Image 1 (cartoon, rainbow, N blue to C red):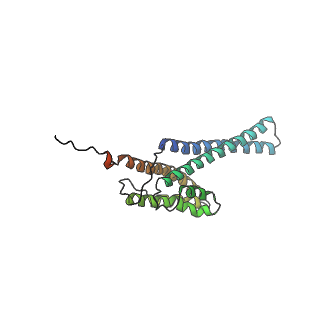
Image 2: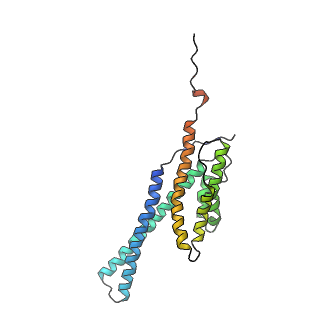
Image 3: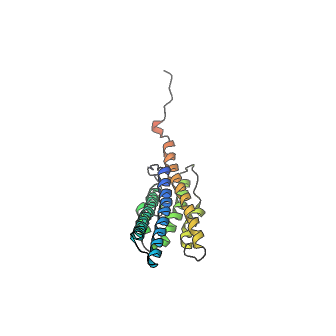
Length: 206
């Protein structure tokens, strides 16, 4: 049997909080920003451009930049989690390394293919890892991970883009939860193992 690597548990509360918080707050800020910019632009086109209109547009731009920064933060959180989840199953059989899993996601066009390897592939390799090491943990739903890879591609389909975007957001949050659970399951399985060298020896009568 291949050797398992030490796995450090992750804080599900932290990752979920950062991811959901960045999306929700970013969405609020970008909505306010766009309203301010559009309102200021409409006022300017109607010939009512003044200091207030300028401030409205400026505030809108600032809010939009802040929202973009929060969305970037959410993406970084996911990439860090991708790195940790692949690191947790490195026993010589994983299809990729943590560095490649994350790094290849930044290659334009290629990342459309790679997301299937990095995300759907993880669910398959994780389940194989459980079987290979006889770990009593809940396997990941491979279909859900596959769906999470397909939905972003459906975002460009007319009439379906909006629904796909909402569905993708919901599933992304669910996946962050599942990924954290999968990493922690491996960490917990290590702590439950009892080494033969540390087992208490039976007391013999003299």
